[in-house]
Image (cartoon, rainbow, N blue to C red; front, side, top):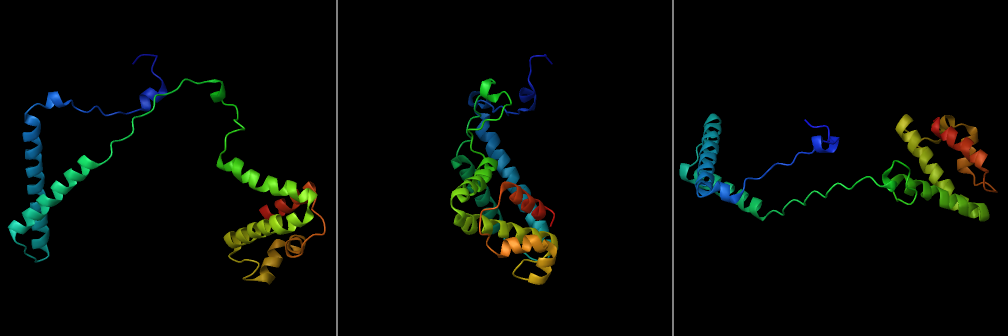
Length: 195
């Protein structure tokens, strides 16, 4: 093994297909022989299985049915779309050097933005906090309660109140007059995580 092979080269497996001209004239004959041997072996297995349970089927019908299944399978395989070619590996560029690409849109970034934008809006409009953020926090609390303790605020309010604690319960059940500070929100999130 030479020292110039990369790990990707070692882990990549591409099966080489035989060329048509190498198969020659015996390709069709070999394919037909394999088809007949396959049909015969399946027919034998089905006959043995049917006899084991006490059933009998006409041999002609059984052979015709299995042959039809094999032919349909070959037709479907011939009509199946070809696999897409593997794109060539691109060399490592400056963008791929391991630093975070902040412009890329991944699920984590989308989730963070799903919270960050409404929180920013709630600074200038406190009713946005009550309409958007507070219901989300309530859903998170209910989900944590459901997963950890098998209850929600709606299904068992008394137990949920005990598990949440008085401060978190009051926060989720009454809408605040003003938007909580980042420190208060961090404390609330920490309490949610401790449920």
